[in-house]
Length: 168
Ligand SMILES: CC(C)(COP(=O)(O)OP(=O)(O)OC[C@H]1O[C@@H](n2cnc3c(N)ncnc32)[C@H](O)[C@@H]1OP(=O)(O)O)[C@@H](O)C(=O)NCCC(=O)NCCS
Image (cartoon, rainbow, N blue to C red; front, side, top):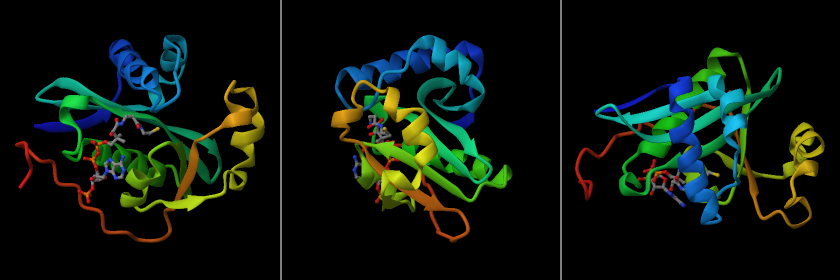
């Protein structure tokens, strides 16, 4: 059974290992273990029959804006709805906090478009650019794409989890 639930401090090392795995392949940015602990209350973890298989975090950036960060799914359970389920849990959290817009900076904009996000100009999120991106060593040569979802628009995105592989 797939579950998505708030992360616990005991999940931090697994989160860090998974983010490092994909970051080493160039698919996302590295995140030090200390930062994962700092942000542990932002994180959701996906478990399959209790085993950690994915993570993502929702970081509040302002009264009406939050960012999905560090979204990653183990490579042996890709394309089974796990990433979509983690994003759905982040969106649910954002709604509970009364947040209107959720954005992400990503190398996988196509995945986020499937979750109801649209392509955006990163300058729609100046607090991200001027507080954080400017400190990133890749800032001058950033290849991440901004995507945003307006939560006031309703989108029907039921996430089925494929119990078997291939799905169907
Ligand atoms: C991107 C990632 C999180 C997707 O997770 P996943 O569990 O494999 O994706 P899902 O099965 O939930 O996919 C949901 C939908 O998005 C589509 N999708 C998945 N990856 C996609 C991609 N890279 N580009 C376009 N569409 C994609 C799926 O086909 C599926 O479409 P459907 O609803 O029509 O069936 C995962 O591939 C991953 O961990 N990648 C490495 C880290 C990374 O790139 N993180 C991105 C955030 S920075």
